Length: 98
Image (cartoon, rainbow, N blue to C red; front, top):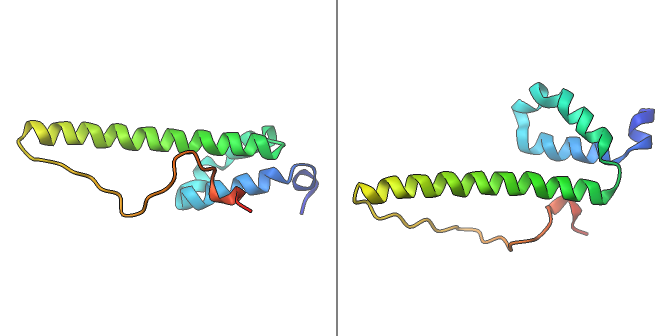
């Protein structure tokens, strides 16, 4: 563990969290992740940032889903999307569960 990780252990958690999401795209984003990680020093900061990432993803997903549903509906195709796994709305990321 280097001195920066010792001074800000949340940065390691953030990097792992984003690596798990980004996988092969992580290296091209690593510089900005390093700078963001330096600013997130408390667990609350990390939870807030995690919630932001989830909200952006979810908003984009549903926007795309609704646009495609509208296109298919106009073409006369009935669309019904059902989630196999239900996740409670408002829960924090699993990395924060005890």
